[in-house]
Image (cartoon, rainbow, N blue to C red; front, side, top):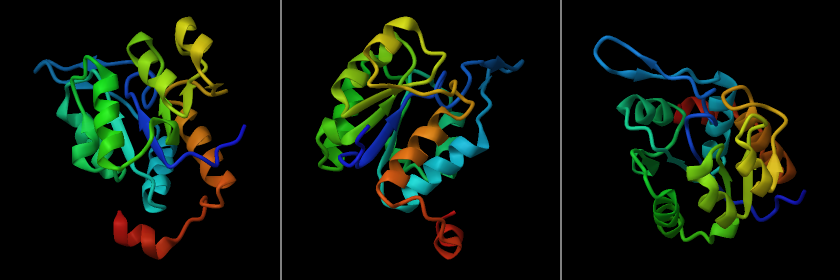
Length: 173
């Protein structure tokens, strides 16, 4: 698959950056677990100048906090999305991107419009069947277990950008 046109990444959270499990504590806070290797891939993308957006139906501020630690700009974390295509358009406009220049990650029905609009729609191997049927690429990894790492690393490697620079990493993170 040719990834030379990919200039940015956008993704859902639950079922993509996480395994879809949500814990609720006694205060009603919804908690998720994230794979550190997926987070590192996001940092590598950010470190090499790729804009990254989070477009999720989740409402927890903990999502924003986690993604900021991965280098995503606060304004590019879209919470409580009900029409993800709208936020996807805002992200593209903000960075003067064509949707065809973005790799979008989604796993369920609310992601389908963005998956179709993006230059490359990716889903984890445990996505719902409707999403697998329209995805350009089904990752061999499940959500929250390497889907992001494998896909982002593949794009960056294909573009000669999977290069770790410790000084720059230390400065940015």
